[in-house]
Length: 331
Image (cartoon, rainbow, N blue to C red; front, side):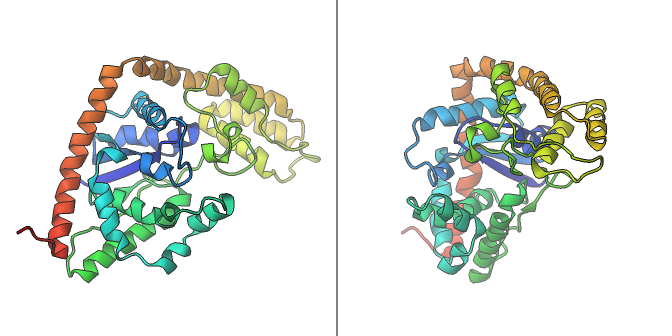
């Protein structure tokens, strides 16, 4: 049985991109592999150093993971900051991570462009913390999106470097796991290619969104003026709408609007109305489950405690082994 690890930042509600990109597959695989799913609250501080309500954000993600079908008895579902061994491994890996390779990281360059007034050390060493998250459980498979593949490559680099420096084969090489298909990326509503909260509230459909909010977001989705002639190449924003519809709607619905597009008779307003109703039908059972779990504080406390205990059992063994390999000894 191989070890699978994945995490999500604790900056608020989960959205359809999270769900289709990974979570629905986690539900299937949690009974087939040794799975660790964590809420990355430390990571969130690199871009939100003074969150308005960190605890509430973490709690919301925990609730929505459970509502989406993660079974805390089958998998290990935990909060990153509940496992202090992660930060110790992060420190030890930092000793063999080089400034040049961290500065060349694509995500670091992107972040310093987006937040020039908050270029903190956490941004620079973000890949090292991510590597610690992965290596702490000696994970073999890591479900990641396209934007995280470079970080996974760096995790392999740090693990292999540790093995080489200390002449061991302790850390396995983690690799991207895509559930037997191409890595999925759900597009946003703003005309870009990625759904995510960091791209703006109106870009993402959250699992907990009320029907009115969903209709409002979808109707505001970016499109274009429509195909001028039948068969004209599709713009990125319109392609995004069709890709989202393919994930949510029936094949007949997709075929209907694709046929209208190819004939240059499509009305984007009609397409958005149909897409909004299909999204509402899909998310309503999830939203109802979210409300039910959110009201059960005792259950949430039990899940968090159990997850921390299970994660620390694995993490403490790894850190103790790493300390021994490096040469730390008690007297």
